[in-house]
Image (cartoon, rainbow, N blue to C red; front, side, top):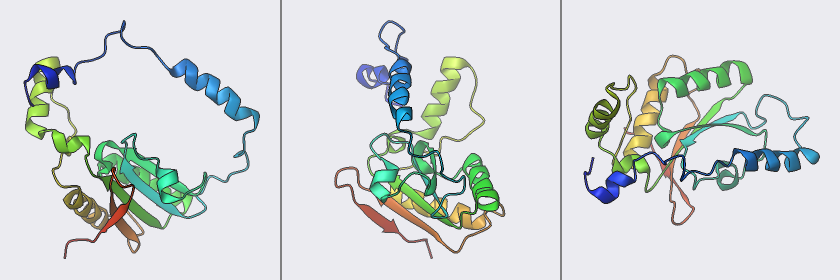
Length: 185
């Protein structure tokens, strides 16, 4: 990782004196939301029978950008939107118990994982806390290649039952548009 003081400060924990918890705001917003709770009768199975795997980036409102309503899809998010063992676990449950049949992947431009070197990150963690993570960061430099790799992982996984309708996209954070990524041939 870059050792410049500016970039190094971006990765330091926020001190307790600098941090203002917002959980109380969430509770207040929830109280207002619950007054006219519109979703009490939604069924547990997503009505569109689709699972979306996307990056956790806060610039992407997955329901809005895909035109989805509550109860229409499972949305599984992680850093990078990459296919990990835990995503496979969630998709296995989604398909086998909750009737999803389609998987849509959404990665995006200007992803934070494009800025991180995997080896440097692991070394920094070992230096800081004395332990290397058992998980892989899954950093990448090309979101299109990352989508292709994720699609391939889905096709190769024995735990993903329904593989006929897997599509991948890169969302442009500056235009709001999706660009389809086709699997490698």
